[in-house]
Amino acid sequence: MKKLVIIINGNGGVGKDTLCDFAGSVFRVRNISAITPIKEIASAHGWKGEKDAKARKLLADLKAAFISYNDLPFLYIKEQYHLFLEDKEEEVMFIHIREAEEIDKVKQYVKIPCITLLVTRSQKKNQCWGNPSDDNVALYQYDYRYNNDKPLKDAKRDFPLFLQSIFETETAMSKVK
Image 1 (cartoon, rainbow, N blue to C red):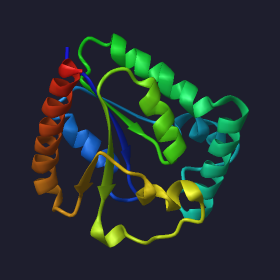
Image 2 (tube, helix red, strand yellow):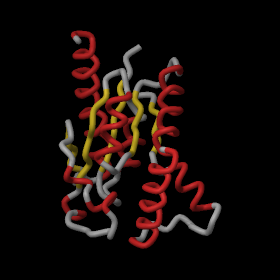
Image 3 (cartoon, rainbow, N blue to C red):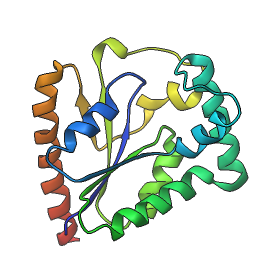
Image 4 (cartoon, rainbow, N blue to C red):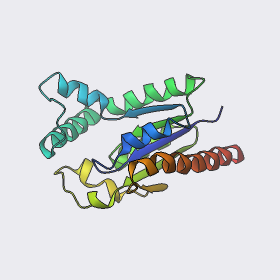
């Protein structure tokens, strides 16, 4: 079975999760985030799911601390990746990662076709969140970019087509290597 890992990134509010949901109309999808285990820890100690600058900084700082301490986000991603490989039906795994070093770590670990995708939206440019994880998203050299400026109904049709093209190209190229 053909499988593809997509490391997805983009500033807050550009519609990454919505696009991942749209991909589910064409592919069987696993959608995870490196921040998930950090959110669980933060939730247990008072974070209520806010997405403002203060909360984003808290999560970014906690993530950095756990990366330094025991690489918890990467351990979580590895576990999810192996579950994805074992699953006989899932075709695409989205991994949400912000930091360039963490993106590179995952790209080196993954042994099947793996690409990076930046999602942008014109009205969301130049917002400062006050932490390097969110503020440096656009500095990485991504394999693909998707501008999510279309109306929702158009993006619902367009994004899966965009992904189908990538999926076919990347999985075909992996057979050549």
